[in-house]
Length: 205
Image (cartoon, rainbow, N blue to C red; front, top):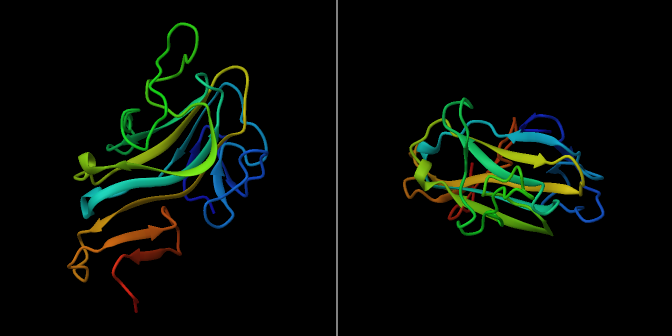
């Protein structure tokens, strides 16, 4: 089940079977630019989250697992966010942030024409966890983020696989959690069925 909205085509939900990108972190399904081959040239495609109320979470952190195989300095992905229901979008974070983008390259007249100076590009075929501290946005009640993929007019590779996307933090609005225990809701976003996990709970009824 696809809990993100795809804009611009390309992104798929399912079992990855590429030569390099063929693993999920948990379960079998991932989000991918192509589950069993290369991505398309000259493409801009977004994987857009639902809306989150960050004002109800203390110390929110965006986390996900990702592996990627992109044409270095030509094709890229980054994350953008909106706090006005998608009217305007801003790049989330910078290459100088820990555990985030691997490139700060800007267009220089010879390559990376689409690079905004904050992106993932090149290849890292191992599924790794990436995280971004959303503390600066903690008062926002309409937070949306999107994975922003851009490819140029030629040369394509296997692309991107993403798994276990979630926002972690401390719940503020539920009275039963007076100690503000660390919690995780997964899968996140979710429809109908979801799981809640928090650090010092042994059971829930």
